[in-house]
Length: 464
Image (cartoon, rainbow, N blue to C red; front, top):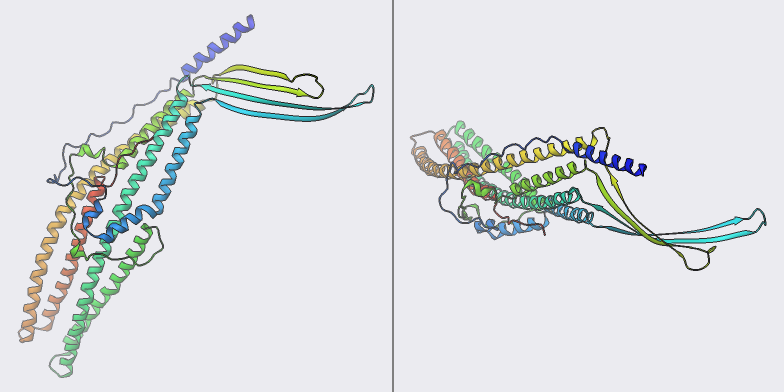
């Protein structure tokens, strides 16, 4: 009786000590910045963000490349494997809330010799047994770990969606950059042919004594300067093809071409909406939210680890021996155990504090993700407006330089100006043509960045 009272007192003291130890001081999470009321560069009315927004460029080759990358890209396949891993871990953690049933069996064969009679005895003993165990989730530790695993699955899924969006945007940007380099190469090759004809003409005039060696040297220098641009652009095209091949999940090789840069239609500008809508549209923000939920559940499980645990066990079996006669002996047992942490040198408390720190890190990561999303939308909206304006100005400059070249050539042919004046006009027009094409490609790429910043191509998923 006294022993039972002492045991009860010890259990009560252990329970009180555990409850006291569970009162870990956890700092509140940092405040999350509120979204701005509107965008700085408020766009006009636009179309809804489509899941397959890249088809708006009206280039079948571009659409096929993006579709291929979304199937064969190695990073996306790796992300799918991470989702499968997270789902398996969720199933494993959910199973921990159910009882376990194990089957055990043992068999022995022994030989003994009697000292009195010298007679040997051989015995065979077999003991099959069923064992059951169940941990009572008194403080919600197991359910919290299951919630954390479920949130991790959602984080993995939304992470895969975020990567899917990034891959689609990367392929579209790489293809548009490739077509831009193709167009610039065509201009450089066409200009090189023109420079070659001009060099031949300058050489004939020098041979006939009509012009000086200075004009011939100037024509040779201009031809060589243009010839340097061609291999530079060819190298850029080769590198862009290799990078695009990697995105497609295949070895570097030539990339099919679709429409020319000037024929690629600019997609309709998407409706940006209000900044608060971005919080539910972008998959990386949803991933950050899921990571907060997972860290909160992990913190709850870590705090519950400081409290006592109750485990129920039971077994059912039989004992059969060749030395016994009759039916086997039936054996069974039912019991329970309480395990309360008393002294672990602050290990469990430190683990809870570490979980709280990880929760704060998740909140800060969410805040950074949100602010980055707002910044990317603002940058994309500003880039579209300024690049379109810059492209229009560059086109007007190209027209003016083309007229200047015509006048300079006529003045040189009529003997009113030197050949250097025509060379300057040719050089300026060549640079202007390259600039216009580059700005055209940049403007198309800016709209890709806007679709990416708005979370286009992603549909919200849920853990089943």
